Length: 365
Ligand code: ATP
Ligand code: MG
Image (cartoon, rainbow, N blue to C red; front, side, top):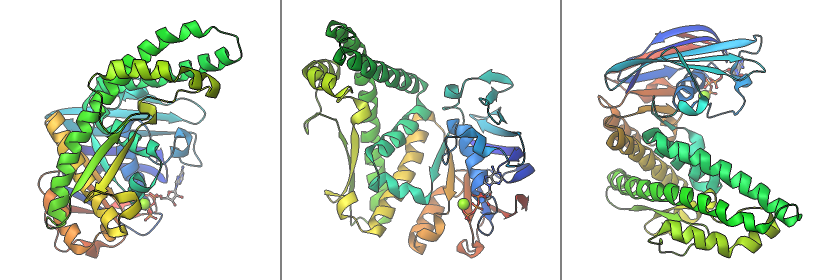
């Protein structure tokens, strides 16, 4: 997988930009607030269909303009593809895949990326929703079916919650719930089954990477935690969800929300059997995240047959020189990478790299 070319019009602080990339390491160097992250964001947009920094597409349009466009030319399994985004303030964006209009939810799974930014520490420290989102994006990039079922599940939860409130207000009969629950249980079982599989694979890969990064001194593990579940994962997930939803029905009606299901689950990261969130030092947490990111690369490679594109935003300066070297030696000649940095000296004698200087919305090589 590689991005060959990026073309921007009135995107963020870029008036016009047309730039070709190397399939090895692309390094964007510049002072703060010049437009380095904006480039990575545009590539991420092509992968996920939305920015990693804002949910508002209007934010992406240059302030003094009404519309913007992003065009990405990328190669996937040796086939050239084109993704185009047309953004008009106050309207829904239009997305074109090889010149055909597609829906936002159809974007994910074509151009695959792994993004690593300083905010990723929140994967350890932050709310469960961030970890779920991380896992969902990861699996969705490899499986469009997963993504479709996930969207359907989320809609079903919203509708069930709506119904719960109506039952509470006596506008609807509780007899309507069981058929909903059956539908929900089916989708929940599918999603959790896929997540368990991914957590197992990712956990194994991350542990391998982690041992490499720490000289085999520490081991990293992931545990999937089902809301309302015990330590042991039930054998029949569908049956388990049916029972749980029935069991929780009264509570759910009183609360007006659904208390079990993949929308409530979490993933626990541990180092040497201790929870990384509570007991890990800053350095251990960073190393844990780095191992996780490298595992993501391998996971997507094994699922899709190709390495995704790696986006490293500002992370080099946060890693010590040993970890930096480990990371570079892993990706060099293997993974197309986009790195941003304020200081070019972090990359001593980088072979196979192409340098871009970013200054005030302009790029020079
Ligand atoms: P840092 O090193 O601090 O991370 P950066 O080079 O990554 O900086 P970017 O995040 O890419 O910087 O942002 C570059 C500039 O783009 C910022 O000054 C920001 O104010 C500006 N900017 C953001 N959105 C828009 C927009 N819609 N229109 C015009 N400029 C924008
Ligand atoms: Mg930045």
